[in-house]
Image (tube, rainbow, N blue to C red; front, side, top):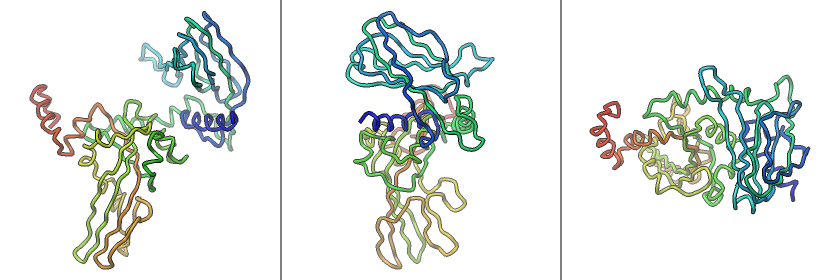
Amino acid sequence: MWNESLKKLVETVAFKLGVNPSLLTAELDGLLCMEKGGYIERKNDDEDVMGSLLIQLPSKFSGGELTIYNPAAEDDDQDEEESFKFTLGAGEEAAYSCHFACRFSDCEYEMAKLRSGSRVLLRYSLHYKQVGAKVMPTAGVVNESRTLLEESLYGLPPADRMVVLPLVKEYDGLTLVNSGVKALSRSHRKKAEALLAAGADWELLIVNAKLVHSCSYGGHSDDTSIIEVFDESGSLVTEEMSWLTETIDFSSIEHDDGMLLAFDHDDLCVSNWGACKSRSGAYASKQTYMATFLLSYDPAFEMELKCLGGCEEVAEVCKKIVVTRDYELL
């Protein structure tokens, strides 16, 4: 049972760190017991491995915050280096469940003093199977690979700070609810984690949509609608995100003939929506497609995105323009 759970956790760790799950393994190399007043000074004790994984067993304590430093973000023009802090459930939460944290070998870490109680942690070394001449993944290497995507997202103008990524298949809502990105296949989850990593302040949503493609002698047309919207954890947020219905144009994503629905030279339907779910008629036909999309957007520019959809929030945008005199919003 523990081995199966550990295997799933290592896969999650791989997605979080941005590496190939099939090449990552974990080996137990230590048991750490900390009492009140215990702490770990800033250090880095990994040399020949990709990194380490800490699994905190159910413990009751306060304090003891874990801080991990990112060496890849160091900049001579910055006064403070980038760091990430984890409470690991300090308080009542840690007493009833396990918590984990992972890091690359080039990231130093430290633990603050425990103010009360005690904690027990298992320490695993993370080993990565190197294929060919590829270098061992580090925070620096992975950070460089994300830079282009990060720059692309944050370089978008306010009205375009939204990315819609087709998954070419449909995930059932019952599968997504309360699971979110964890319900996605390995390849799709990689894409979701890449968007989460590149757009640190962006919102990630999973959208189930429907397309009805009609063909007749007079031409063809598309009718698209959003069925369900889930946040990354799997909570249903369709009602709160109703403004997306008018904002997203599924037929206008860049491609020579339309990325999501196109025609080849023989006028045959080519679709990134996956397989056709139903078809009716012969000459005047209707083809129905159902598919799931990843949607990432910058909430700091939500008002501008709502304005694009012509929703009732337009009045709110207009009011903001008048109050702030920020005519760029127009």
